[in-house]
Length: 203
Image (cartoon, rainbow, N blue to C red):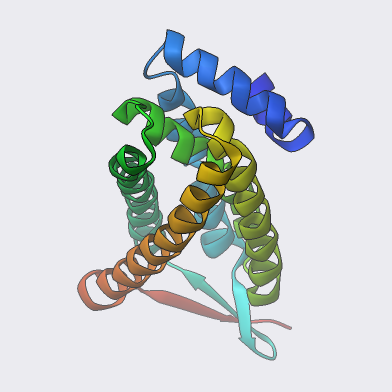
């Protein structure tokens, strides 16, 4: 785990300062972070849905076929990248209202680092469980919101009042983007790709 990621969880204020400097020196510095960490949820989900499975009824384990799991994970990965890019573009568009002048790359980079808790929460996909997913994703949502409100003024060089208003707007848009992408992904997977389930009796 790189130093900026560790700092996001231990010293978020200092982390955003370091990330901003890195993005100014290397405009696409965030790409490795985004491309690699975004792999965590789909890879873990693939393992969890094909090898571990989940239980919907007593003495029955449900798994996905390798083909269906691969389709789901590829769809999740692409959706994640598209969602982060869309959020970055919206941050760029909205920043004009607050007299900030970040580049598109800086805005996408900010979005990528802000959703880091969701990437790490993807480890829970190794053990498919509705309640575990709710717990882990809930915690990731809380900490991503914290990173957004703490980091935006620092990253965008805005006054605290501007940063707070901007953060509230971005939080609302982020929620809308997240829900829209997830719903779209699920609809495509169920209606176009048609998942294949494998059921096995236990005991």
